[in-house]
Every structure is written in structure tokens, then in C-alpha cells.
Length: 359
Image 1 (tube, rainbow, N blue to C red):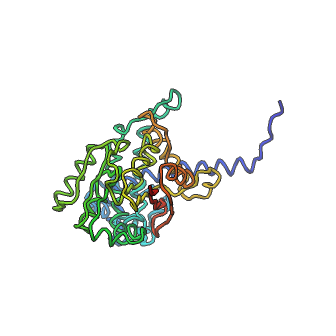
Image 2 (image 1 turned 180 degrees about the horizontal axis):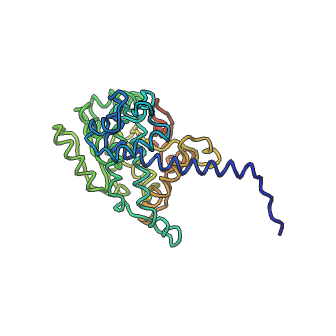
Image 3 (image 1 turned 90 degrees about the vertical axis):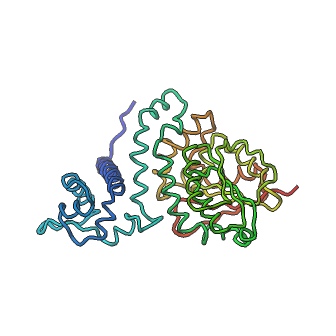
């Protein structure tokens, strides 16, 4: 068998790319740390400062801050003046690295990298022996998802997302029955319940931790029209009960998503609407080559969304199930029409508006 000739230029270019990947992975980890200890928020409010000044302002240990700054400077994230030995975070960089950036804060998203890395060994075992890694193996996932979704919902849920459904805000003001599937920590339900006191809301999730957090927030806000239940959403058992059902990035995680979608369709009243927010991607791999976050999405799928489904003997639908598959599954579940929309500022998600078939 002839040995394939190597294009040396291509080989060198690829090696350089892999070095960039290694450096980028390291920067992602350090960016996650910077977000969690508040260094980006602190530096955004400081003039050019020494490592001692940055550490003092952030109430952190200088030696660790100095080494972190080394990674940030060589990673071209923080500017450094060797003459004064001062560091500065440019406003253009702070715009996507600080908590004030809201949904555009990419530093918060970096937290998923170290979280998923903790699951590397059991995932390798799954590659060899099959099965999956259970949801319980991800102690911070509930917290990170709550932080991530809250920034989007606080900025957009009431004024932008709900009005995607024609006439929905008026119906909510007049009073309807609403359910949220896979509600997590319940922040979306509590936002809607506070805005629309005439409507009644219930959130379902199988995470007891999430439901406890949801109930605490509702109680703190005095929301009598928001309720939460620990429930396996494959068995809704609520025929014709709801006018609106929502699911925010939750369907692709389900062990049996087709069954969940069928249950949602059956739980809607005539003219009921299902608002499903899920990953903006294609079901065809080649069409995702230019998708900005595609490698990240496939990684999250492998190390979380797909595997938690397989751990429950599920179908392992995965994060990147794509618009085509989503449309087909919604139609198969009994929805007569499916419309897909996007909102400004959310590059991750499609917004599916599905109405049930009339009988």
C-alpha cells in the first residue's frame, strides 16, 4: 500500500491551528475563573492598574491575580503597559466579559468548559461501554443554566420573546393557564407570573434542587399565581388544561422527547400554543460548518445533553438536533403549524411557535 504524500504546508498550518486550540482552551478556563471571582467586573471600573491594585480592588490574592493577568495579557484579552507595569481592560472587551453585558457576557459561558471537563473520565467510559452520565453527576449545571437563562429572560422574555406569539401578551393580561416544561429554577415562570397576575402558571422539572429554588423565588416575590412541581414530564397527564406551554432549551435534553412533545400537544386547549426555545442549528452536519458555536454545541451535547438522555435509557437526541428534526417531531406530535423565529441578541436559539391540531 502506497504511503500518502504529506503536504508540508498544510501540515504546518494544521499544527499551528492545534496550538491555537490549546491556547484558546487555556484562555477559556482562565476566563471562567475571572468571571467567577469578579475580576472582569472589577477591572472594567478601574483605570490602568498594577496587579496589587487590581487584587486589592477585587479583594483577592495578588500572586494569583498576577498569574491570571499573565494569561489574559498573552491571550490578548487584557492590555499591559510594561513601562508602568499596569493592566487595563478595554471597554470593547468589557462589553462581552462583564455582568453588565447581560446576555452578551461570554465570560459566563466559559464556565461550561471546566464543568464539562469534570465529566471527561465517565464520558470516556461511555465511549467504550455505552450508557450515559446521569444528571446528578453535574453539581453546578443547574446553577449555570439558571444564570445563563436569567440574563436572557430578564432582558427579553416579557418585551421580546412572548410578543413573538401574536396576541399573547393581551391573552396573558386577561388571564390564561400556562405551563413551563423543564422549568429548572423557575425564573421564567416567576417573571411571567409577576408581569401577568391574572394568569396562572405552573413549572415542571425533575430536579428537586431546581424546584426548591423556584419556590423560594416565588415566595420571596409574593407570587400566589406561580406553582412548581417535581415531575417526569413524559407523563403530563393534563389533557386540554393549558392555553400556553413553554419550554426553554429543555426538549433536546429529554430522555424521550417525542413522548414529551406528544404530551404537550395533548395538554393544550383548542387554539393553544407551544412556545419552544431550542438550539439554532441544522440537522445536517455540513450546514453547521459555518455555525459560529458549532464545536461548542457538539461538545456540550457529547458531555451533557446527549449523555444524560442515554443515562435514562433515552434516545440521546442531543443538543444539535436541528431545525429540520424539530419541525418533523413537532408535526409528528400533533402540531398543525410550526413557525420559527429569532430574536436579536440571542445567537444560540430558535423560537418555535407551534399550534395544536384541531379535532
